[in-house]
Image (cartoon, rainbow, N blue to C red):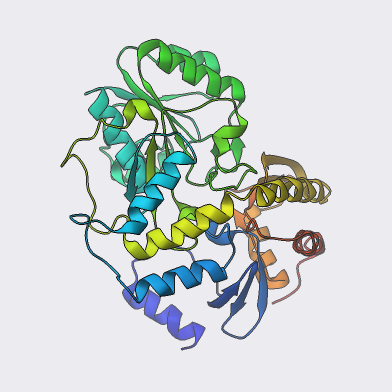
Length: 391
């Protein structure tokens, strides 16, 4: 089927919630993608931090195929080994409590919101400016962006928005607060690293009033920043955290992970999901978690991240670079459009990157990328400093 035919099907039958580029990808391996015409692309977006282990990692594919040949689905009314093993490994690798498996990052954040309000009924949830926690109603209500919220009002009540300022956050946390929900590094709004002062203030404020500190590690977790979980580099341990994206190695999964204090807040019947923790995706996640936990890989992420950061900073149209590990963004010089640059990168240089706003471009390469991949990406980005070619 041609690209034109796919576009016709989209116009006729797909609800138009996405603005797609005119490329059909048909195959992937490691850091590479191929389109329907056989053209090779260098992927520095990784499905928006989903493919931390790279496209079609052989161990993930093998685990999926083997499990699919045995059992696809059984429901959570019965035991399946992959779900129980994954829950144990997630808890042991992080906060030491218990785990609720689900199907996406938004679902994980919905579970977290329910959990903290089960622990403190009627309590408010404090969030900060520029946050993004998802598009379902609870998660959207925790996402203080007018363009995303306004069309769907009224939203879920009980969310308090504060500036990314330690004093403002401390003042907002009261005896009425159920939780503070934070992304240690805000991904969708342009790779904004929250200061350690803010994170410490959040933990201290929560401890003071008995509220819960919850970290949204949906994009920044699973080795993305050079440690398995982003909080490990901050000196601040949350009471609970959410994970998704890279956890499934390319398949859809989410998880709410608690520390001991919140481990037994949910009771039988409080929450559930039909497909959550299915044996196929849990098998894939077990492999992805093992790969992303490898100390050698995490050291590689830190080193490669510095190489990429230095190269991005030398681009003539970049005015600043921020982020951690292989979670980086550049702000562009005045007059340079990030969406236009990302489109040119794709269509002229066959480099997959992403614009998160009018002047910000985001880079989330697979963690298995090599020095040569970074150097090639930087060369292609450098070529974009030239005048656009006619297409």
